[in-house]
Length: 266
Picture 1 (cartoon, one colour):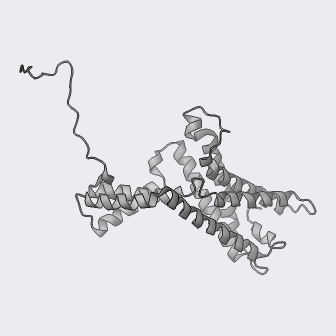
Picture 2 (cartoon, helix red, strand yellow):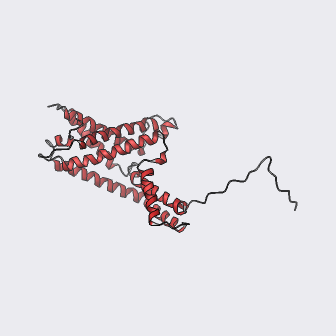
Picture 3 (tube, helix red, strand yellow):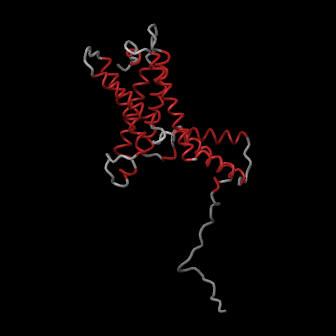
């Protein structure tokens, strides 16, 4: 199972062109949903306005080398390893889900577009990455959903309490989980039984919810967060501090043992 391309087996009953069109439609939904999100929330407009204002408040002009250094550090630390989350469980779950999703999506595109032809032979690495990515996404997503969400961990809310913002993580877990089950059932050849077809339909529907719900979910944050992290670190490097007030000196000490000024009588 783990070294078998599930889309190659599916190509016996579904023409590869339809699978490819489906992926292109999902990409189009991402673009449309993200653009709608930007127009509605106006966060991109605010981002550039804030960056322009910060540039005016900069106390230092960064060289190209300094900018590259800041950018590289941001990619390695803030983006690739989500260091802003600290060194705890939340960061571990996020990294598992993030890299699992990346592996899952990339290997899906590669296998569907390159290895679904009748004469094609899929290198073992791609099905392995697909299954491993799906498993990591399920584990990281479930770890976060059941144990690490702020409203569950800190506010004692029940794990089954669902709000609109949860659409992204739930659809992501469902897509990966249904994909794994479908791949397994398909690989054991159920013959005339419809078990694998049921989970194939669930896999397709969960993908449609995931990518069709970009406007209503937190999907777009994967585009905003890297940009915000880069801008924050550049602002710290050039002294503009992202338009925040300068750091205050140590506060004056008041209370017992402090010599007070003599009262003035007017």
